[in-house]
Each structure stands twice: as C-alpha cells, then as structure tokens.
Length: 175
Image (tube, helix red, strand yellow):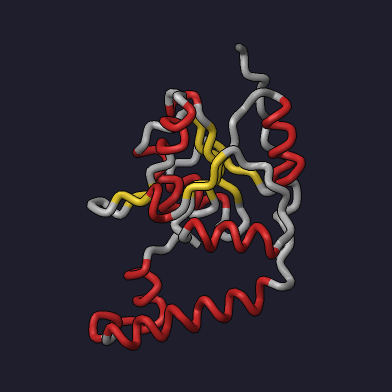
C-alpha cells in the first residue's frame, strides 16, 4: 500500500530492481494487474466506509478519493466491490501525483471544492500517504491501520490513528 513503481520493483526484485528491462517491468505490472483483478472478486468495501461517507455527507462534508492508482482502475475497483457512488470526486494518479516530487497532492480535491486544505480531513493507510497529506497542509490526517500498525502511522505524522472507520469523529460543517 502506498508504494510507487520504483518501490514496487525493489520489493519484487531487491537489489536487481535497477537491472529490470522495460519489457520485464511491463510484464510484472501486467501480472500484478491480472492478480489484482482475480483477487478483487472477493473484495468488499472496508467495514465502516459506507457509513462514514454517508455520515460525512450528511454533516456537509465533500468526499473524495485521491489515489496513486489510475482513475479508471479506481472506478473499476469501486464497481467490482459494489461500492455505491458516494464520492463527490475520484482523483487518480493522473490527477494527484506530482511528477517532480512523486508525492500525492491530497490538496487537489480541496482546491476543486474551493476549500482551504487546513480545513480538510484525510484518512490514509500508508506512511507515504500520511507524509504527502501533511506536506499539502491538510489540517487533520488520520492513520487507518488496515495495512500498517499504529506506531508506524504515528511515526509518519498522523494526528490520530484508528483501527475502524467507525472510530472517525466528524463535526457538522458550519455554513
């Protein structure tokens, strides 16, 4: 979770990652995609995610996904897991990745909504995502322990860490 392609290649090939040919890199990415699609048939929305999204919108919050995955993959994944269309905007790699810094720009959604990033909440399950959100000036960054432990997310800078999305506290937006 939260790895860029160079990190994924290092995970797969170790010290030999730099010697992978372009053809082998493409073959590995194709295999990764096929494996994901095969396994995705059993995926379900993260417990509490639908309730949290509905609660956020009832309280007047905008909701968005900002991911390193390509936007079309995000749409396909949401369709595969039968996640209702609850997001106001879905931003993929091509929308939020800063090609110079390789950081995910969480504030992109805030700017689309005309909101100060400091007034936003980001829920992240990766250390790199937490660091990216903080670098964008997001005011409240919540670590979610779906893939990493509490101490790792806290060390990355999360303002708080939750094990369940039901534990996320939101206030009503004052209009």
